[in-house]
Image 1 (cartoon, rainbow, N blue to C red):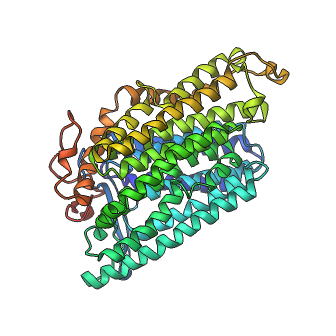
Image 2 (tube, one colour):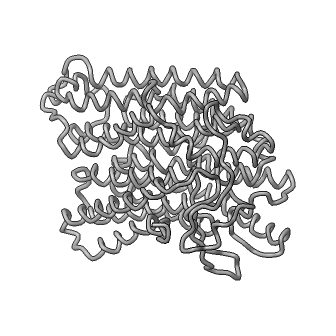
Length: 529
């Protein structure tokens, strides 16, 4: 396995699936669905060795590096660390689950939909693997078009408006980020005398404070739109409500994490002084997002819109953890990124199960569903409780670490954030009670059928992860720990190891990760994560 270019395989297997789908007649929907599903399952299986062979060190692993446009300093450069590897696994698993969930939900233009999903997967995995800015930007933009089509073609009544809003918001952020990348590119040449797009080479570059702040703000807008942070969040509820179920799951589960991943991979290590300058106002924006998202979620009549606003609140927690700038809080933020992907992905699948049966998402249209769909009621209850952070389920661990780490940085922030946990319980349980309990008052709900075997099968991995990550998150924490200790050390020199949570071993000494085919790229210990 070590000699295989694993990251290239995981990134481009979905693209291979696209070429296969192009050869199939568009009327043969059963074969199209089968090929797309098998492609995503193979991709998930190929991504598992990234987890099983991962060494707990902050050095980039499974590195692949080949010159691409050497005169411009552009190379095909990929690698993963404790942060990106976990997000790649979440991506490949979620996409495979989405393929099963769309089996009956998507009936028109099935071939085009599956092609869009596979292109989207290649873009998402590529973003998490890329260590060359040119490559990263290609993948970042590559995700935009399929997601635009998934919302705009297969979405609800206001799909064009929602898709355009998503597209324009993201493009504005992308353009600002491109300007900042080009500035860094020419600045590196001015300082070092050669051109490079190597992301790790930009870390530790001397940049004066005023330039750092402007660059930080350019990246901030690009990533804050993606998260989305308050006040850049207004595209999200529209996109979620109009997107088909699979689109919502991918959007909540993976795409939003690209914003938070961007802060961890780029903003913090490249602009450490600007990060320290921005801590307070970003923390306040995160806190406003936590409380605002929760309060707006409480008054929603549409279940999907409620879950969308809950994402604004949950991602506020992640941002608060990241900008507490200590190991504990960032670990909590990283865990919460994974947990949100699992819990909110499962919530959108649950809403999709109801929508396929009744073609409405209004809470008032339901009531007494438990008596008609007992299996669904159990799964929906588990997912709801995980979303509000019940101890023993996955949502609790990340929130707890974030609040503990934030308390160390600023007790006031932690106190305000805690109110978000309480509000989450209020809006989620109130929604659950109105949809699932009481008497069946709407005659249309009398005919509701419980979940079939296919639906139970695609919920099973998420439900298993809800319990596993809730009861035993230690292996995941140990994998991300060295990377996060190193990251904190880059932003606040001399503080990395001191803030490590009790009972978790400090980062092991740096040693070489897995390279691909003896590539020299994996010996980079000086400039990297």
